[in-house]
Image 1: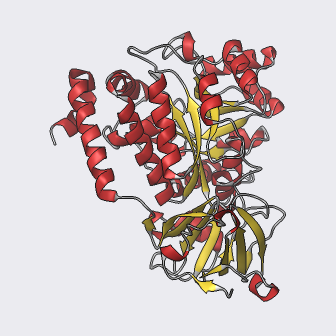
Image 2: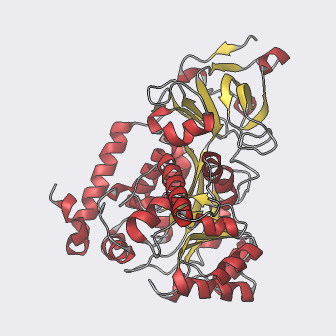
Image 3: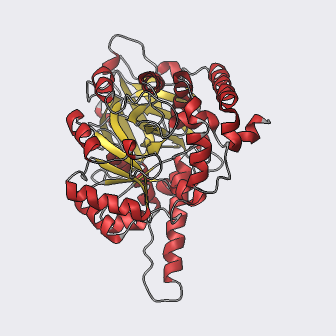
Length: 477
């Protein structure tokens, strides 16, 4: 069989018995690998076989790679690893930008976690999680950790997982009991059922983690990390993602975890703003990962309001990046990269202003590393995704480098970080399967999605009533 040009999405969505062995050759693109051992290629090819990257190189077609393959002519495009979101509360997506001017963590907790979260049904969680995952895919995020902290019943968890599975994203379901309101208190015991039912294999798109809070200040001890949850994580063989890691109280908790031997490389600390030097030292020595939320810290004003990138790097930790809460923040990773780059460089120059000190700036490649390979490592998946490396899963982006906001292509990494937005993501592959093509999500009925999102949102607001005073702006639309 000769090579076949891919002119439409139907050329890529193969429904044959040998789908696991299908071959796709992306040809003639600028390949940004984000693999320290694989240099970028100003004009290169990527060969996909089944779900994996089979080869990366110049003119692979001349060496027989195009045989029996669908060929994508990607001249004028950048091929890059899929972006990785290390922390998003996906069920909140139906309430997007409902509190755009929230002033602090307390306002968010009262309006969303106390006022609204208790009224969500399992179907509401499904709709919000599906919306968040599809939005992630549309913007080039191929792997998303859903910090699912509204697990009121086993069915709430089941529906959140179903939503991730149906979208085809590489999803990490991080399960936690809710902060407030009535719930079944099935968590964390129900994690064993989730593990055996949905995550029996480690060789699949969906993986499981435990979610927890750093301290008991917000919602009490039941959902705060400590020896009890660490034992559950060890028994299930999963990692732990810990949110609301802020300030002095979290610093003391970090040191207690270190002394108890429950702070290690399978532990992710989210935000990590305002921590003490001793806490950072313990984190670096333990080999933890850190998930920064650049726009969340800065816009909402969490603790110091400064994303802790300098502190993480000083401790030897290269962080991942995250979206956090769409009720107040943007949905895409390009904004996170730009925000962090600008904040860190501003902070570095300001600290050295009027002195002869060296200015320690991060680079565009640094933040792209945080959003790809380091994000994958933070989610426990760096052996699976995060770079264009032969043998890894084919989680890839095609970016239009000749779009009006990107042309002409001079520096590929700079174009991704400083120029690109979701409209320029022309193609998305997850495990070798096309999820977005020619700028459109594949297999998604947008009208059906819109109807379900509006119906869910309206039902939530009606049931929340007076408890959702902070959302009065959308009640009065």
